[in-house]
Length: 498
Image 1: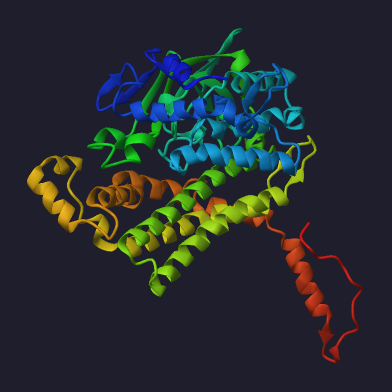
Image 2 (image 1 turned 90 degrees about the vertical axis):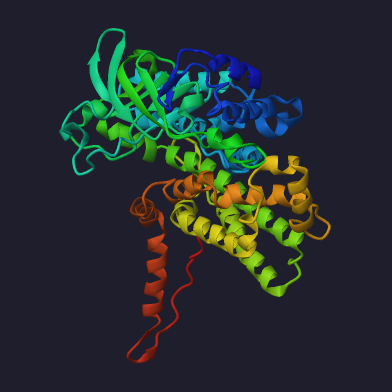
């Protein structure tokens, strides 16, 4: 098992080009924009490698016989999905659900790719062999792979090959006996600045003529020509960990990746100029379901954390016994319970596909995707309502406690029964970082479009809901009566969900 320190050392001064605030960062493990995020990722490796967590978080590699992260497991049954969920839940707890692109996310996609030989049967066998080899390397070496699978927002009215410059979107511009050359840009590289590899592909629908962009490849983050342009860092802007306990530790950053004539050896090419297979790799395999199942487990952990957070505030301020407050907490708890229930239902309603992979229940998963923006917004609004001005009337920073005169007033006026000022301020700062800071604002946008625009997620729901069963109920209702009144009883039929 890879340790956290081994991860940190592997990405330290490794030649990657990460740009932020007009400079190229030489060491992401020490730069204030990325330092604490790398330590949060390192913590995941250490937790997984801890022998005390072996049964929960690992399984045995079929290739090496050594323990490996359950995130890489290809589930073959409902029981496998349950074991996987328990492991992913525990790992999500390390960031309280605020890191969405930890190593477990893309691990799920590659487990699905490797578990889908029937999908790759439509192309040259070498590409499937490449997928399996890279998946096994990810699993056995505990690699952290991020991805860029969405083209930049330049002109969405035109397909990739009809853009003003055909090399705006990342695609193939050349090939030779050793590999291919990639040029262009892709987003949204969450975690890319601190990962080991980037999976470059395109989840957006491609059209005939877009063959150069219809690829799936793996590229080291420090490969020559890879430029990682990070958005503003909320961690770097945090005045202290006390004042911004979430932003300072869990800002995984999002990046635009520019691929400037990047060489990719053939062994890291999984799909090549195949529009249909590029689409199929995400939606005909279990990739979209397994990847988003991990994401929804993370979201369930986050909502549970937020529920515990607002309950703690109500207890601190003494309002917990007021019926209106209990009612509001009940509403918040219902939102968290709904998301957790949909995650559990995906295991109960899983289906084994033609390749023997257990696919989480699609109907439940896409229902959660459709509801996620609304549920998150409702919860944040409810928390804002309950905490009121308490998150605004706070000391400017932890430094205020070091001023004796200021500290005296803080201790006198910013306290609650049984809770000294220091503890109350600490709690309220945590609440603000979860619901009101710039970091929280990014998360509001993140949860809104995590699985795509609303018309995309609703389209998935439309294609996966049991409309046939719903229409059958309608037909039974219509067959039960007519102008003459009640019709003869129909033969009993099983209509329970499959």
